[in-house]
Amino acid sequence: MKATRAISLLAALLAAGCATPPPAATQTAPEKTEAAKEADEVVSLLALLEGVGGRLPAGESPRRQLATLLARLTADQARETKRLEAQVKEEQRRADELQQKLDAMLKIEENLRRGRR
Image 1 (cartoon, one colour):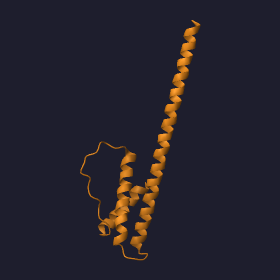
Image 2 (cartoon, helix red, strand yellow; image 1 turned 30 degrees about the vertical axis):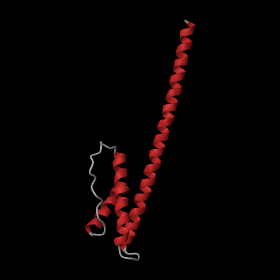
Image 3 (tube, one colour; image 1 turned 90 degrees about the vertical axis):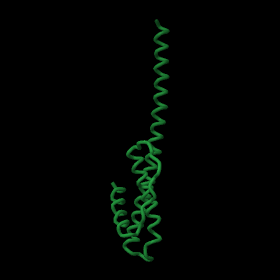
């Protein structure tokens, strides 16, 4: 996945001294889904990349180009993740709504059958 490649490239920047890792979280969080873990990685990566820009030499050095590319890739991934999460939420809402309608129709059918007896 793109985020994994971006994180690998960021690791190279860290090794070169162009970026510093974000502070470690002090709280233990409940178990997260894979999508939530990936979103956290993207946010962490974006935070690292924001710090990289100020430490790189001016101009279009290969490191600056790489940092810019990584920032764009991770920002795109974050937007796509957010869009997909909203889409999933909307689909779940629609599914719940349709289930309620189906349940209501089944109840009406059951009441009609009882009335015929």
